[in-house]
Image (cartoon, rainbow, N blue to C red; front, top):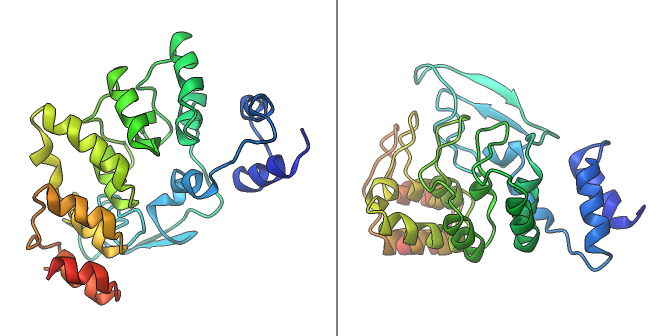
Length: 247
């Protein structure tokens, strides 16, 4: 269907719209609301708030997604990576989870699709969840709650915190707590910047996510590689509501 919706999706994904995505859109019909901002969050440039990211010695520590473990080398290294206009190679299952069509996800699983299939960044569909209900469903069906991506060794918990997805974060936290491993993730520092999920959320002004992390016992005094706390990061960027929560 050569609709406005299709043109919007093409603009986001590039000139080639995957056949299965086009078929899905046709199946969903004209009332389908494509959640652009959620889909964008799962693009490769989710590692930064900018199309071109400066990874200066700390991986993607300053990015909107807070994927602070990305990159290698010492604290003095510097490199630039262009992420503009890119999107991971993912399965149809990833795309269905990303647009919250869990009815379609169920059909894919019935066909034998691996619930832990990985995209080109090593992320499973759980990383693409946009609702707490989706997280619960995927976990019930066997999603690995402790899986880490191959891009920066980040967990889904860290990604949700970094992107301000407080509802999916809270849902996943319940499952991590049930498994007895929540404490391992609440204050887990990224490999290079040593930023915690609270650092990442505070750095981006995600008020509800900061509240959730604090309710889970996140350490407000934890310092990153520069000796900065989450409060320092929020204050530096002028996120007053977050500052109030952390003071």
